Every structure is written in structure tokens, then in C-alpha cells.
Length: 88
Length: 359
Image (cartoon, rainbow over all chains, first blue to last red; front, top):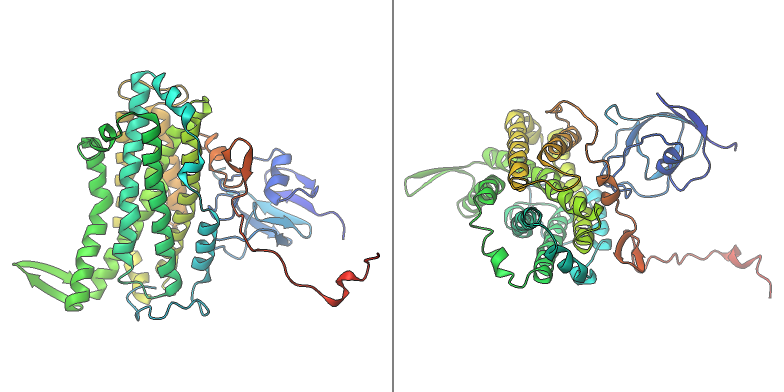
């Protein structure tokens, strides 16, 4: 399996460097990803997963739509494309 | 979830909504005690504060004390008689218990920074600004509790006592319950955050840091609680649990929005009361009001409502660093992982596990 590529709509595309979570990966790239609790329960880091699959490394305590993921709880499994919420 | 069959045996093997069990586990893993936090430097900091900052600090503490007095009791009194799922029942109890820890921590803080704690506690219920808001915090709770007690003793229906008419029909009870949950959500999701912002603003300047550590632990709990109420409200509004609630959520939409609007307005007024004698570095009434608008929008969106205020970026971006749940520092030498659970060792051993093991 090749290194997952992360495409963030309205921002740039980069390769995942095995940070502990997707949120950390976005922060390393200086993409202003929203967050609060980093524990999977506040829901602030919710983003839309448009393409690809993620793997959960921490349990999420939130009701999520099928295309939503919490960046603080997962890492990319394949190449992915995500979109941050508008207000961030 | 509510007004169904009684909870009966406390069994958790078959759960309708496992999410509440997960919330309970998370809450238990968060367990902390106020005495873990050392407040000795806070006393010195407090003595050196100018009077207008002491006013900001103490007023917030008083208000939070009152809010947690409500939250430490009311979920149990109001929701336990009508809940019908054991996992949800236990969540209410776990939730209310953690609020009692918050209440105890306010006493811990006040006892440490002030020689005569009574001066603070005795003035909570005589402060007009606090009373004004306490009324709207407790009104729905009171109405629900009153109707529930009539419902449990006299059954569903409209009853008249002492010439006063009480509509304890199931429909009206469900409506009251829905609105009470909205007002609880507003309490934990908006009202608390105004006080949190002030405590963290002090700590950003490296004063009252012990207090900020306690507040950080409280904020972590509150974030979990509000996830719980958001879950309940969203499940109810979807109609998946009880079709009545789907219609009630639609019917009560305007009232629910009005609860948010009232709270936002009151919190803005509170902000001007806090800063009436002067601002503090990094925070003033305007910025705090902007934050109220921002946080109200965020919370309303989580419940599927339209944003009430023009959308804006977080006016207090440094708040995020204080709301992170992991690595909440209790003492300088130890950093605690919030999701730490005892007895979580993996005991599964496979036949082949020692194959590559040489002596």
C-alpha cells in the first residue's frame, strides 16, 4: 500500500506522514482545521470525507452522517479527499 | 427513552442506545478531584489583582457555582422519574455526579483565595444579575418537575388543584421535556463558556493558573455533557425513538430558538456587567459578546438549527488550547491522559504469540 495522499478541498494536497491522527496531519500542513477536545466527543473537528477510507484510532462519541469523519479520531487508510466546514 | 416502560432491572446487556454507555465510560475515565490542584499561588495572584479584576473573577465564580448547583441536582430530579432506558438513566446519574464535583471545586477555589468564603457564597443569591439569569435557567426545569409529579401521582391528563389547571397530558409533558433539554443544552453549551473564557484569559497572562486548571477539568466534563444532551435532542427530533417527538420538535422550533436567543442576550448583558468597572488585558465586553455569538452559532448548528448571528471566526482562538481534553495538566510534574482507564490490559494470547521467542 502506497503512502496515503490527503487532498483538502480549497487547500492543498499532501502525503500523510504517519502523524497520530488526521488532525495532526492537517496541523503539520498548517491547514486551519477546527478542533476542541481532541477526544472524539465535542464534534468540532468534523469534516466531510468525499473520497477514500479512514481508519479510526480513537472511538468517536458522536452521531455522524455517512460522509462525515472526526479528524481527531482517525487516520487515512487510502488516498482521501476531505472538505473542511465553511466557517473555519 | 422517556415515558415508556419503567426501567426495572438495571441491565446493560441489551442497549437501545450504546452511545450513552460510551459517554458514561468516558465520564468515569475523566474522574478527578479538586484537591489534586494546588491553588497556593492563586491566593497571591488574587491579592495582587486590581479591584475590577477581582470583581470579574469572583462574579464568574459565583455564577458558575449557581449553575452547577442547578445542574448537580436537577437532572436527577427532573429526568429520572420519566426515563425508560437503564443506560440513559445511568448516564443522568453519572452526569449529575460529576456536577457535584464541580460544585465542590468552587468551594475549594474560594476557600483557597479568600479568608472568609461566606462573603462570596452569601452574595450569590442576592446578586440581581445572577438572579436574573438563574430564573431562565430553572424555569423549564421547575415546570417539568411540577408536571411530572402530578403525572406520576394522578396519571396523564388535565388536572385542577386549588383552582389551578395543570396540563399533565403526555403530549404536554413531552413538549416540556424537549424544551427543558434545549435549555439544559444552552446552559452547558453557551452560559458556561462565558465564564470559562474569563478564567482562561487570566491564565493566558499567567495569573490564577491553579483556578484555570480546575476550570479546564470542568470544561472537559461540560463538553461531554453537552454531547449527551445533543444526542438526546437529535434522537428525539429524528422521531426514531418516539414519533411524537418528531412533531414536537417541529412545533417547538420557534420556542427552542427563542431559548437560544434569550441566553445569548443574557450572556452579553452579563459580559457588560463583568467589565463595568474596567476590562482586563486580552478581554473586554465586546470580544466576549462576539464570542457568545460565535459559540451560539456553533451550538445551534449542532442541533440542526440555522445560525442566529452573522457567521464569524472564533474571536478567542486561544480558547481551543484550553479545551483540549488530552494531557490536562494537574500538577506540573504529571500530565494525565484523559482517556486513561484502569484494567484495560489486553489479555488475549494466541497459540503462536511466543513462536519467535528464544531463550
